[in-house]
Image (cartoon, rainbow, N blue to C red):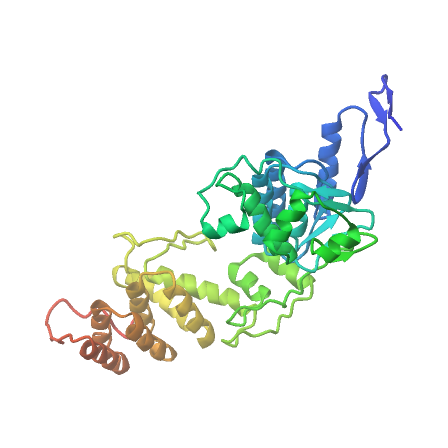
Length: 420
């Protein structure tokens, strides 16, 4: 049914735009504006529609939408509805690479006729979440630009697999390799089916391996459990959110029921990780590596300049205040903050700052750092630290690395355990 336009009012009464998986208004005039509005509606539902031939321009748009949705909410599925045919190979490869790179699961649906690069994108969905509606059809055929992309001359093994290839079908070869991985079929079978332009019903596509299930309708979005994935240190997503200081993500995870009582291997709860970040930044500032100023997170991280190097020695008043704050942190918080600060580089500056702070529970860690990553300069700092444990560690390091220890006078010791 066509829309009837009222010229006097400048309005249009329209039929609905048919888009696989959803519906929206379409005017008989001004189609691009209506499509843009419909696309925004879908994006609010974390859904991307590929309902026409895949080209480089819309491939860039789809890739940008995927990255944007994954950034906004890395714990909720993204749905891609596909009713698309053919398109350049590079456009399909670009989308597949983005799908593989995002954290959240990508759910793909075959909603109509899917061929070429549309089929390529369909198979790239998260395993177990690739679906086809009952009326969908899939056709395997060679990409139209399979002879356009040139590549290196094939070796003997490639010639055996691609007997007609003489270095001018790198696009076809890439598609065949990825398709074989997606479906679990052999490259030879994939190439033969492409040459035959083999057609599949939805159920046959499931049996072949393009989709995992045939469903009567699109399933509702699913959330990843906030505590499902924990790193090797036992940190949950909520731990990382608190550590990064991202309040919006913290609120979202708490709303999803994230467990606030989970402890990592350091015995720290997620909320404690905010204190770890604060202690880490204070350590870096004490070492002269950043300048926090008076704004949380408003720091500059990089190699220390001559004017900022070693705040513990050049600005003793400021250093004393920082040391006092660092001594008030929980031992587990301080221990983890020290480890993270060490990762920022400038190891000697961090260790000199730790000596000035003088927390007894850090002695074992300081000795380990000297053994594993020490230099003669760091060993010298330990020898002048005033701590019997660190002095002995410095002596051990010197003997192990065949250094001679000499006493000197003048210049003053630059280290002092707990004197900051």
